[in-house]
Image (cartoon, rainbow over all chains, first blue to last red; front, side, top):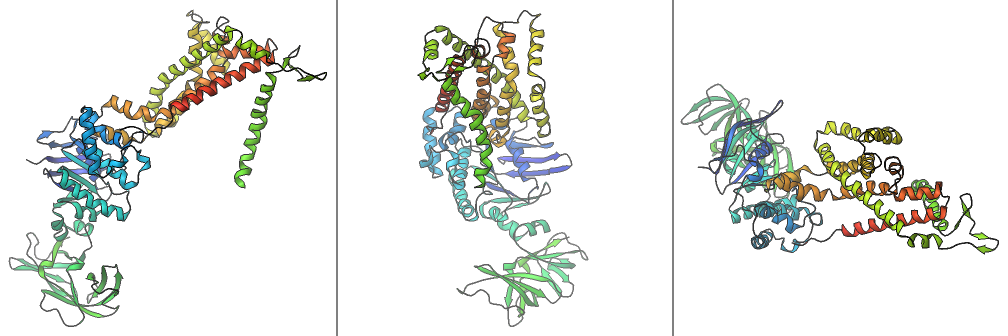
Length: 361
Length: 268
């Protein structure tokens, strides 16, 4: 039995179907992420788990116990809020000790666990300061310590990194992963950032318009997106419009107008004659300036139309013969060199059949 | 430069109409009363007429301390009752739908739109048949009634600015309804409580119309005493002394409460 079981949960606000028939199982010890664009329903789902809102239909079970009718203060679920919601009139120590006081712990237990919790987030020397005297990253760690100190069954994190600058976000992302491993508490993390989701999660649920589009490990979601929304939302992907010629055991034969045949891996579902897209990630494409790449299952000719230097890699936009533009990515392995292909250069582009996926329209 | 120009008119206004009169009052407290009101000039026939007479008068008679004490008691009682009545009201308005808040605030200040004396006479009509007129109860009731909006507004203004996420966080971390109030809402509203209390306490302390109309003649308050010196006894120096001592007492109290409520580094 999963730690948290979400069964056919729906929640509507007037005209807006915020959560639409969502079912999920979250296992004990998991770092689970809900990712999606703003307004996709991920925060509403989080509030339903915390108990601040009730589902219209469906039910939630924690440790096989129904959560309906249990108010937030009685649920063994704590939240790290987006704004951190630190109590401004209390010191760091008072903030962090708050859940233990609420649970009626003894003064001895409170002081020893407080010490432990502050050390966990490297804030032992800030115990007597007020939240306003701390930096953004320190506040964030106070919020984490406060939510973790009473060892909840489930920790909810509502976009906890959104208010931090990029460098700090990266650092705290690393700290979060280590922290989760160390305390072993199940994390449910909400973010709109696909990079964050890929970096921290054991499993990811991609949400859109209140529905769950796909659930899986980061590499599954990234490597085998199930539909166009997931493909487009997670990372960058090239979409080649195609028509299905044959879908058999031996392979998927697709036809791209003005280009020719594309071979993909067999998938269940598509029928001959239907339209869709072949999706392939920029880093999966191989590019050469001379020759044909005939050793690859799919190979075409094109010209470099543009390039974008990003430091570690350069992204090249390559126009194929039928006018479709693909993005390809090459690592800049030679220091001081921004690109290996110039604008207008003729190139051959190719990939193996299992480098991408076919997505139905 | 612009900063100076903009602040010049209000500064000038305060200097001319507040600071100067206050200083004149300090002078007046040492002067002699004129026969028909007003003051004997400080220098008359080459003779200095200043004295400490009014201060000796004040500290030489227990009656003044008693009147001051009674006035403070009335002001404290009024402030406390106003606070207890205004807090739930302010909280209710602050937690109500944003669209309704302005209307509710308007309703709170609406009584101020009708004439002060008419509102007090209305109390006479209400209290008379109940045999409560000319009692301490009548005075307190009138005081609370008149000053309630001045307690509600600063409280509302404070409570309205509380981040609702703080209460959600407290609830999420295990705090029930009452605990959330005692641990979060109340401590965060202390500035509003102080502001409202000052806005009620200080005017009540100097108020003379309400005690005169609703309290009868038995229990004199400082406000009445000062008014009597200026209008009935024509003793401006004593009136000035009483005013100054009242101001000094209020300032001392304000200083004391600021000291008591100073931000402290909390202990773990």
